[in-house]
Image 1: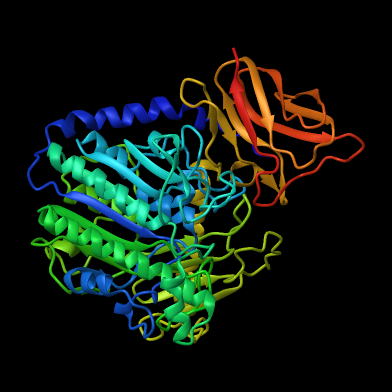
Image 2 (image 1 turned 120 degrees about the vertical axis):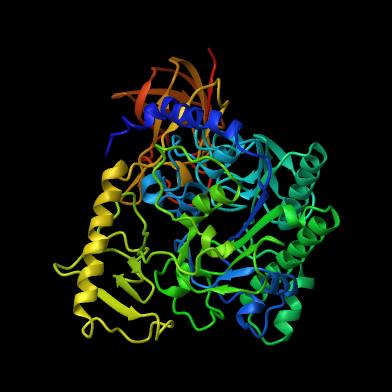
Length: 574
C-alpha cells in the first residue's frame, strides 16, 4: 500500500495562494465581452448518438438545429470513461495529474488542491452552479462546493442508484442540493435542466455573469425512461436497450430545446457561450457513425464525441473544424473567451482553441493527445493507451480496460492507424510506418513517466474535519482503497483527535465486533444483534482507516460490490 500523501495534506495552503495571486488581477478584468458560460456534458452519448451524424433512427431535432448554428469540432476527444473526462475538462490537465485514476473503487477522487474552471471563473466574478453528475469525490475537499461551485444539485458516486445513494431512481431521484439531501420531483434530466434555468434567471436579475455546468447522467445505465419515449423506437425495430438509450436522448434533446428557447426569450443568447459534448463513447453496441469501439476502448468509438460550440454573433454558424481537440482544451479556451486571468503557476496540458473558434487562425500547431485508462489504482505502462495526432493513432493493448491481471509482453502489443484514410481503424499499418510508431511510442513513454512523477498516481485524500463536513460518509465501493479487488479501508486525514461515532452498514442482524484499525492500532467494540454503531477515540493523523464488522463465528467479509454494504458514517462527538 502506498502512503505517500505528503503533497495532499498541504493542498489547502497552496490552493489558496494560487487563487489569491490571480484574484487581484481578476478584479481589474474588464466586464465587457465576458460571456455567460454553459457546458452541457452528457454521459455515455457517443459520436453516433445524434441526428447530425447521420444516425437514421434517433430523433434529436434541437441538437441538429444547434449543430447547424454552431461550430462543430468534428475530431473532439475525451477519455474513454466518465471520471477521467470530467477531471480533465474541469482542470485543463491530463487526469493522471489530478489524482483521478479511473471511475470507482478509490479511483475517482480528485485531489483537493486541483484548480477548476469553476474556481477561476468564480474568482473573476462569475456565479457558478453545477446541476447533475460530479463523480470526482463525494467527501471534503473533493466535493463541487469545495471546487468552486456556489450552487450545487448533484447525485453522488458515478450514477443515480449507485452506492452510497441506494435505493434511488431516475424518476423523482434523491439528490443533494448545496450539501443537503433533496427530494426532487420529476425525471432526473428534467430536474437538472429546470434547476439550471432557475439559477440562470436569478443571475439574469442580478446582472451577474454565470457559469453553468450541466452534466446529465443520461443516457448512462440504468436505462430508466418513460415508455412514451422508448416504445416508438422499439416499434421501429430497435432492440429495447437501444430504444431506451435513444428515448433518454430524445428527452435530453427536448431539454436542450427548452434551454435554447429560454436563452432566446430572456435575451441571453448573444451573451452566452454554450458548449455541448459527450464524455465518452456508448456503453452498449449501437450506431457509431462508422467508428470502431465504444466506452472503455481507446479506439475512436470510445474517445471521439459530439462537440458543439455556440455563441451567436461571435462564432460562425455551421462551420466544421476537423483539427484534433480534447477535453483538456476547454479550460484554457474559456479563460481566453471570458477574459479571465490564468495563474502563472497553474500548469495546463490543454491548448487555447479560441483562435480556431473566432477565426483568427485556421490551424494550431500540431501536437499529440494521450489517452489511457484501466481498472486498478496502479496504472501499467502500455495498457489500454493511445496517442492521437492529426494523421495517426498509436494504440497499445486495446480492449484491456477491465483486465487488472494483464501480463504485459516484453515488447508492447501495438497497433497503428492512419486516421486520415481510415477513421474506422480497420487496417493496422504498423509495419508500413515503423518510424512513426517508434516516435509515437517514445512520446507516450515520456508522457507516462511525467504523469507518474506528478503525483505517483495518488488518488485524492478524504479529509475528516467536522468544521468542513459533518458527518463524513465513507462509501466503500466508490471511495475505498482497493488492492487486488479487495477493499482495505480509506485513505484519510483526521484533522482533530476525539471521540467519534462510527456507524456501519451491515447485511446481517447477528451480533459481532465492530473493528477499527487506525495509526497501527486495532480496537473493537461489541455490537448486539441489530446494532450498527459504537464510539471510538481516534487520533489526528493521515493514513489508512480500516473499519469492518465481523459477525460472531464468521470470517471477515471484504465487500467489493457496488452496494452500501460496509459503508460507514463517521461523526465526531467531542
